[in-house]
Image 1 (cartoon, helix red, strand yellow):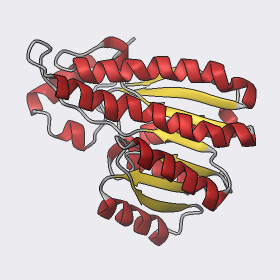
Image 2: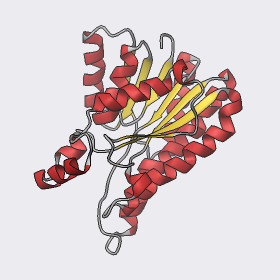
Image 3: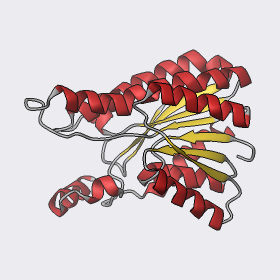
Image 4: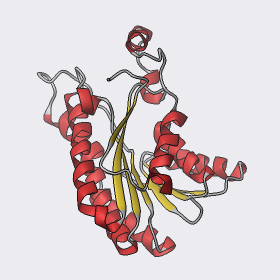
Length: 246
């Protein structure tokens, strides 16, 4: 991925952080975005200390701010003259039963998880269309494929990303731009770490591989979809969940 430029949202922790490092390991210049600017600077310092072939540029970003997204993508285009890879990874949860879920709980998750992906894709594809090349990777969830009690908002946002992915793939394919979605299952991150042991043990019993996945097992698949090796794959939902959903 030498000379490739990537933009990754939610890059300060978990899956997003791993994706940033994996892309940099393969030579890409990665604009890592998140609200936590301190964590991003630590990530960039780690990449530098490891002398990775690529580089990580930390960039504070609130993905619920449409104007900030447009300004960021414009600045990436001005600095690097290209944008090859977009990874829409930023996401939050605001869990609750549907009968007691308020409008803000629903809207906050839809804006952060889905609307931001639309805004970023809209901005980024203008650069990609001009250069007639691009890789757009949306990080969804098996919750968007199979639903999940207490997560009507989260599942709806991730299901919406599937529709967004397929529509973008059909619109932009003729310009040599692919768009795919990764749907992780239970992955060992800060988000799953807070789950009660009883819940984690119960989940593992449902997973044929009998364990949670590691963030690198997602980031390496994302790197494949971002590479030229995946040039004939578009509009696909790739579930990476240890066999939980078959």
